Length: 105
Length: 193
Image (cartoon, rainbow over all chains, first blue to last red; front, side):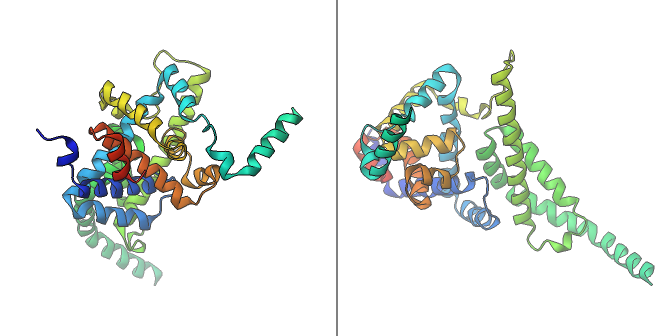
């Protein structure tokens, strides 16, 4: 058997990407009728679109298990922990604001 | 004169009713799988997805003046989307209540669908999330687990909303590719993460 990287086709990844882009738009509480209509056309126009969407939807759903229970709460804290240095570089004012806030405490 | 005209329109509506309900049931059959997939994504639960789809369909059938709706399919999906938002709000309220007043059996906020993943796949998923750039991981986690909108995530990360959406989407595809067995470097290249 060949490794997955050889059998895996670029088109599959692109469809997964398209499916996931849709999933994010549909997941918004304020999803528009236009988006719903456009997605319906996309979903129903190609069996491979359906498969890709179902694949990503299952991952999206299954990921929920990561947040379950006490271990889940701890895991969420680790996943959301701030990056060691990336953010201050992007928003230098933040470092000053935080330092100022700390001084006030 | 009003009486006669309204009774005439009532008679007309009655004559049209079977045809209309036939058209609507065809609409439902045609898009049922699509609607179900959408609701399953939103609610994470087979039974709730079916219930909401039914309810949206009933609302469409019960419209007093169906003629005012030019695009019943859009109405069906939008109604279902709104009903799903209401359900999620209820679930979140119940989950909050459970945190304060624990019950023997706690309500699963996201439904049983996510038990479909094997433990080793979940481990890979968690590992994959930590392999991602901080912004991608944070965007994914806030959207999936904390129910933040992409606008809120964009503000939090100091990027545009389009970038925020891209981060979430790429993070998910990267994780999926890692679960499928691709090496980190290739998954990153394929997912553009």
